[in-house]
Length: 183
Ligand SMILES: [Mg+2]
Image 1: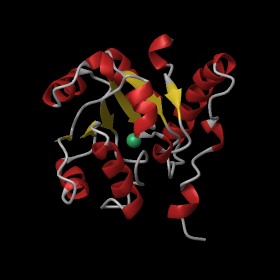
Image 2: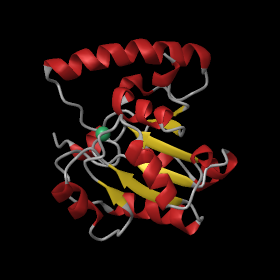
Image 3: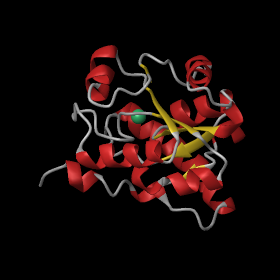
């Protein structure tokens, strides 16, 4: 069960600051894209995402994308950013995460992976020996498979919040949802 427990939860990616990463001894951050930084439907990074990424790189934090999505989506999203990317990463398999940390010239014990899926991103992080940061999905799917997964995730998070009573509670969803879903 420890493999499924995040190390930190955040209401949204913007809450992860360079200062926090430094305090945690982290100098490399691997990022999931879909529903972590932007919904599936958003093809390119908005100004807020770009500003946040810039603030990390200004502080010397090395950043890369690690996505299970395909080349077309990931490369278009990264077009203006030019960050190291791995698409078709097959998370939770840890291989591509390990390779990416190496490619960044970082150490796994000083690296973290941030994503919105416990059974994909958190598990991948721990299998690769990285810290796991979890955010709620920005625009969640509502199909049966996803609903079942969320039920399992809630059980894991219940345990997490019993231990981490001061951690931001992500079970209410993402504050970014309303920015992306028009009424
Ligand atoms: Mg995702």
